[in-house]
Length: 271
Image (tube, rainbow, N blue to C red):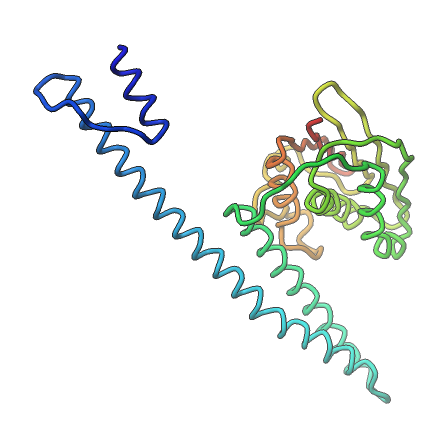
C-alpha cells in the first residue's frame, strides 16, 4: 500500500518513474499506470491543440464578420437619409436594419459563448457594487422598456459582492432583457436583493407571460425556445450564456414561474 501510495503521489506531481521490472503484480500495475499517464499526456496535448485552433477560428470569424455587419448597418442608415422614399421602400429598409441588428447580436452571442466554453475567456471575481451592476443593466433595457411602458423598480442597497463585473453584467442584462421582452405593455418588473451567509441573491421578477413548469428545466439550454414565444424575437442563447457565466463564478440561477402570471429569476453569487 505504501508503494502504491508513492506511485500515485509521483503521478500527481508528474514525477512518475517506472523502476520495477519483474513479474510481480506491483510491477504490472506500475507499467499500466505509466501507459495511462502517457496516453493522458497525449490527449491533453491534443485537447490544447484543438482549443488553440478553436480560439483562432473564433478570432477569425469575429474579424471577418465585423466589417460586413457594420457596413450593412451603415448602408441602412444612409438609405434612411434618402428623400422621397416610398412607404414600401421604408418598410424594406426597416427590415434590413432589423435583420442586421439581429445578425450582429447572434454572431456576438455565439462568439461570447464559444470563448467561455473553450476557456478562452476567464471570469475574474472582485469586490464590486451590486447597485452599479443593476443600474447598468437597467440602462441597457431602458429604451425597450419605455417603448412598452414597462416600469422597472429597484431600491439601492449600497451592498457589495465578489463577481466579475463585465460578465455578470452580461448575465443580468440577458435575464432583464427577457423580462422586458416577455412582459406585456404597461407591465412591471421588480428587482431586489437578499444577503445570505454564503451567497448574495439578486431577484428579477416580472408579471409577464410566465413559463410552463415542464419547460423550466429546459430554458437554460442552448438555442432552446418555448413554443409560447415563437412570435417573439430571439435565438435562445441569452439564458444559456447567463447560466454559464454565473456557474463559472461558483454561483447558480433558479427560476420560479407560473404560466400567465410571470417569472422570478434568482441569481446566486458566492460571497
